[in-house]
Length: 274
Image 1 (tube, one colour):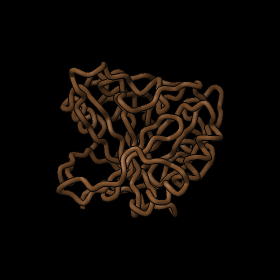
Image 2 (cartoon, one colour):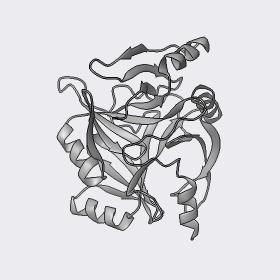
Image 3 (tube, helix red, strand yellow):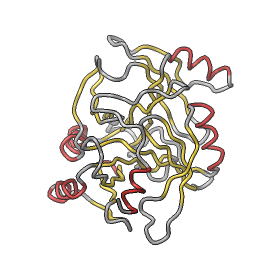
């Protein structure tokens, strides 16, 4: 196994089979979904299904695009509203997947004339979805599935503080990972691991924009016993933006909060279709 493979494998979160989210940690939390506000829902579906290998599924009234470890959710932006800003420039800069067959994925994206941004690592690129959404992707030939969720990359002004906050609130395990792209100048990135996802923390400016209202509007965590979890948050002085409620005609519960750096976060219980 070469160095690049070792680095790539060290970044893999707990795997989940297609149609499953990872089992929750001791805090009752796992990766759930990424919610995108988009101009053209069909164009996004083509990207996430045909180009990235997701599967369209439903849970009650919700339409989801399913990947091992995560769901992508799409909502059409108001055409009369302000122009959509891309994730870059906000506290959540981008997110990343790993694929089993990187040469095949690259060939598929090139044939579709997608914008592909290379990095120092020939096994890693950024592939561009519509609405300015850049997805970091690298290849892991030993991956047990064709594609899998990998990480969410934050840009924050105080890395120790954001790392500690996600550890306290969601039980993310603090750690470090190697920068996959940094072949010429290797370095480590501060992280927090949750089941199904690695939270990666890079140095950002003091006033990074919040996520809400951008093309990557919010991220979602699946929570076991959301009512009790919400009460625990409130006991810590963490205010919910939207109190726990149930989506009509479904078994799904949700709530919303915003982290201290502007990341809009949805909490769900029962998001995965039965």
